[in-house]
Image 1 (cartoon, protein in one colour):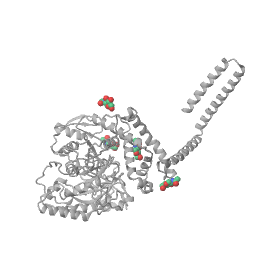
Image 2 (tube, helix red, strand yellow):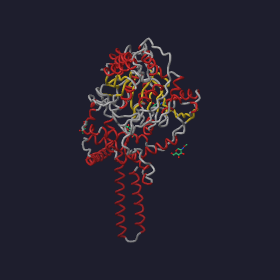
Image 3 (cartoon, protein in one colour):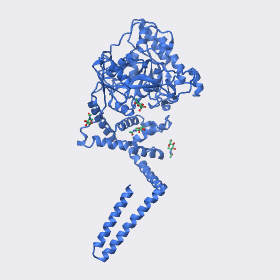
Image 4 (cartoon, helix red, strand yellow):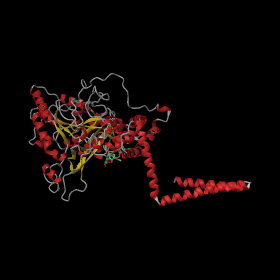
Length: 621
Ligand SMILES: *[C@@H]1O[C@H](CO)[C@@H](O)[C@H](O)[C@H]1NC(C)=O
Ligand SMILES: *[C@@H]1O[C@H](CO)[C@@H](O)[C@H](O)[C@H]1NC(C)=O
Ligand SMILES: *[C@@H]1O[C@H](CO)[C@@H](O)[C@H](O)[C@H]1NC(C)=O
Ligand SMILES: *[C@@H]1O[C@H](CO)[C@@H](O)[C@H](O)[C@H]1NC(C)=O
């Protein structure tokens, strides 16, 4: 196109020159002019010729483009010295150059236009707030607790399977009424973990010794008449980002697989105080990315032929398969919502800042959140109640003033539904007296996904700077994940990082303004919404709503299923509304109580039999 324009301009110049020439007087001038016109025409013709030749012979164009790129790469390699980043070899520098053009620059431009062009950007301050106070108090004590329902008449089922799929509240009732001890429960869940983990690859470390000592303590306390609440004696698992003394904390990564961090993460302390029993450290995808970790790849219990997604892969898979009553996972962008949706369980990504993160691997201080994976929304409420509060060592945590979800009157709520909401939930809530209205979030920011990338990638790289500099990223499990993304993060200038935080502020204001309902229902895994929700710090509850046949089922049929879920979103600090709505929905339906067919695939599914057979069928090692 450009070449054609140039030719056109030259042609017009030539014509003008000719006319001028004939209108002029001196023959000498005429000769000069004719010569000059000839020159222009010649130039024009040869450009025209080259243009068509290039089209006919694209290899020449490709060759010249390649040379240009090579010199770009050399220039960049030289320039990286000034950023103290001169350790990349040429192929990596080439990849960085391409990544910067494709992923970084369009976002820089958009954000600059959005927040930096008017009045020195003063109308759009950065959302990263500086707090000059000297530390925050421990806000975990003195916070009023939710009023959980008290179950009566719960009796111990006959089989371990039936016990394993009970909710926290039901298991708590068994413990409190001494129909089962915490030690017995611990043994049941450890047995199940070991039985199914061959297939699911969801456990990194069993914390067996710790588990039995914590269970024994819970049982002794109860014998002394001390009952700590609904988590008393309940086994659980932690995503292996959370430090627990005496055990390794691997972050799912080969590089860190022998790492021991001898501190008690704040969330672990809280769960210990609540009387629960840590039985395993569960898979996180390597450095909290997807479901691949140094020991394998975690599977989806609903369809063991596919993977769980991540990065809270182990938390989702084990809860889904009834291998733990609940688990803790984390989300920076999608790591709770994706695996919860894939594995068909109820999980809460709470308001940013609700749960303290000290002792937990950090990707991004302004995005990371810890949250529960459970069998029901009621259980999520119980767990979040135990772990919320301000952590003195996590400057972003605070006491989020949640109301009691068990006393929300849902009939007073107006709930929006987006185009991609699962309508079954909407209909059920409507039939229970909730006012439901069609809804759309309205915001003008086009660069939501870029803002997420800039924020997350720069923050992650600042944590894993040394890791990249020393070439450890070459050992990372999947090269096109963090290694690729974090190399191009070297070319995000500090200015554009801050610009992104200011654009994020504008996004938050617009979302706030357009959030005219009490909650809304929409797809929990749509990428734009995942980025938006995390940038805003907005809570979402993932709720299973049905099951579909798998694609390409075996001829004889199968019990394997695809799970269908939806998200219930609430404004920040209103997690209790999402919880209350999900509790209402789940009180009228039973999708959340379905058990995945992990060793009952159906008589004609060619993947036959029990989990132990599956290993040989799949040849997984
Ligand atoms: C650069 O390093 C990577 C990873 O170590 C390697 O695969 C690649 O071949 C290297 N490229 C060059 C040009 O040396
Ligand atoms: C964000 O990064 C991911 C991972 O590299 C990439 O796939 C995606 O396209 C990026 N998004 C944008 C909008 O640049
Ligand atoms: C949507 O937001 C834009 C600004 O972001 C505003 O101009 C417009 O009026 C809003 N539309 C609705 C329907 O609220
Ligand atoms: C929700 O989003 C995911 C990811 O984009 C998509 O696969 C799924 O089909 C969507 N569900 C609905 C109901 O739109």
